[in-house]
Length: 149
View 1 (cartoon, helix red, strand yellow):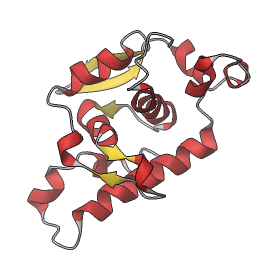
View 2 (cartoon, rainbow, N blue to C red):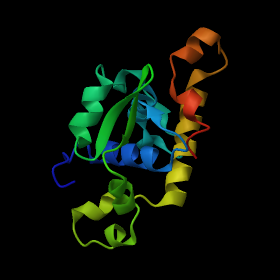
View 3 (cartoon, rainbow, N blue to C red):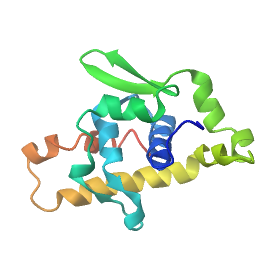
View 4 (cartoon, one colour):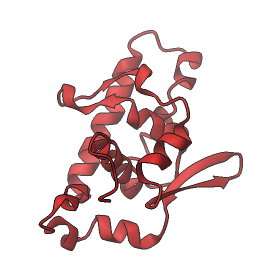
């Protein structure tokens, strides 16, 4: 965790949070939408399409390759923790009480559910009133809003 860039630690943390609380495995495309949210704009994050990485797998793995893994399930690539102990460590009280910079990666479950509910709202509100089947297909996170939170 100490090798994660200072510029991307918050994005990495959002990925950890998403994977930790999802009720099912999340597809790479769904997590790409998490990376495209500006959480600093207020209680409902602003979705910025141009923040989506061109190569989502590379973007996710370059941020935290030793902690997350991309696995093929059927026709989809999904993200999971590289080992079950990663989730246990990220959600542990021991990490929350660490005295160094790694404690910022602690995943507290209730605030994480709230953050991801806000993320889903940010994506859904970005769609506006002109929702069609075609526009919905451009936002994979809309599918997993049930799986998060």
